[in-house]
Image (cartoon, rainbow, N blue to C red; front, side, top):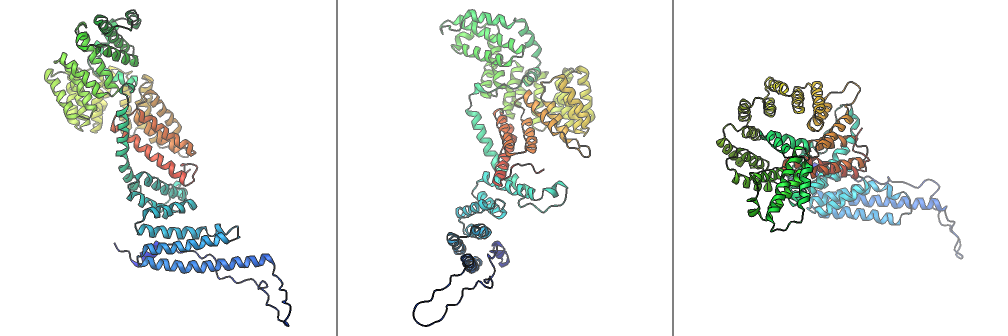
Amino acid sequence: MTMGHHQQQNLLQIATPIVSNVKPPPGTEPPPLPTGKLGKTPTIAAPPTTKSTANDEEVKKEALHTQIETIDKRGKALFKAKNFMDAASAFTEALDAIDAYLAESKSTTAAASLNRQIITLTNNRSAMYEKASMPDLALHDCDDILSRDVTHSKARLRRLRILEARYDYTEALVEVCALQLRFMQENRDKLRMGQQVPNPPVPQSKIEELMGKLIPDEVEKQLNIMKNQNKEDRKLPSSYTIKQLLKSFTGYNAWMANAARGGPLDKFTSELNELGNDIPNDDLERLAKRTTLLSRRGRRNVYEQKFEDAKNDFEAAYKCLNINYDAIKDLLEDDEHARLLEWVGMVRHLRYDLDGALTCYERCCDLEPINAELLVKRAGVKMDGGNHEEAMTLFETALGLDPDAVDALLHRANLRMLQMKPIEAKADLERCLELRPNHILARLRLAAVLMGTEDLDGAKACLDKAEAIDDASSEVHSYRGEMYFAQGELKEAREEFDRAIECDATNPTPYLNSALAIMNTPPMLGTMPDINGAIELLEKAIEADPQFQAAYVNLGQLKLSMATDLTSAKKVISLYDQGLEYCRTAEELKDICSMRLLTIAQVDAASALKMESLNMQ
């Protein structure tokens, strides 16, 4: 759109006069030359040195002012004529004149007195460069301006436009944050008192727009880091998470009973020591024996909740088996081969080695093709990999083998919830409870579905029945607390979350929920929310489960709000880096990457503004 004359005029700042027309004070004019007879040239009395120097300085400043005023008018006329590069040259000429004056000036204050004039002329030239599609030159001038005045909003807005046009969204985000921080700094008293403030120089939507462009690439970068990571180095989830997953299968009690009957850990360790580690690859009998002992010790470790040791035993057993897979598997007793494959599949799934888990589960399914539970576990891997259609096919196959397969109904309900199909999920869970009325997890999942559909009476009835089955269940009290939270009954919610923690201090969820309840509870008049209490709860949530991504996000936000200096703010970035190490999916990465990018931009913006803290209190 063609810019109107008035709009063009406003683009350029008016160069502030350096001095007005100043006349020398009375008594300081140079004396007239004396007249006399020819002959010896009369000696001229020199005026006082200080006054003469001051006069010379004033004259030079007045001349500079006149020169700049003339050049400035020419530059603006060239701008109006859309001769942008010629206009830029005019402003350069004015800046060169100032440089020449400063090089000769003996005044110690000359540079400081001309600083605002230099900024104005440089800003005008930068605007011309931007108009002339010379972004590098425009950015260079913006940087010069900001080195003199970090609060110069026009230079920052120009930098923002140019950086965004060059797809440098990271630096553009820093400029948006700097503009917002400066706006909040200027209006902090009004903001604190809830008074009306002018519109900010950039809307909040600009941050959201830039973040939307940055996050996909950042998530992709982190996913590539994960893919290149040694899968064996990936950490297991928390013990609580593993126990909840194991208990979601009807075979859990049978597994534990079988492991208990196998004998103590010392027994297996002693037999393995007797067998030795250096077994020749052709000694198949001893290799088969070692495979069996490692597999059984792994199951005993699961029974004793030593999950890391269990993982190591299962992987060692599988490695031993693969020394000569076809020969050794035929020497394993009963279903030892199938159970080893199943458990290796389980620990690999827990480490999010989805391909490795599928390989083991599929081999196991070849051995036991009518085992519905194995199909459910394969479906779980497909779900975590985002292959929902394949997962659904496996659930349907399992239910085709056994229409009353409780595991298939329970886990298919989870898939239905992911697919936003609450009616179908509710039907699966109700059928599951018809078959096993005391299935606490099914009742809790049904309560969650009912809460999601705002059937709070139905959810309460489900929770009452679950509590009647096990009133010491941490999950029951955690779910009930969530129901109270949804109803806005925050005091009752916190009481239930506290009860959940008392029942099982390793359950991370009630710590997070209790912290959220604190932050959502309106403080009493004259008091502030118990932010330190919320921070302590979130730290305990991460201690209980280092993979609890929601806890990192909320903890980072609270700590950033409490940071009294930029060093403390930078520690929040380190917290997000810690959280990234435990992410497993793009969905988990998204929230932490988002908060990390924004925090880095805010810290960089505050540094650029020479602020000591992000805290506006």
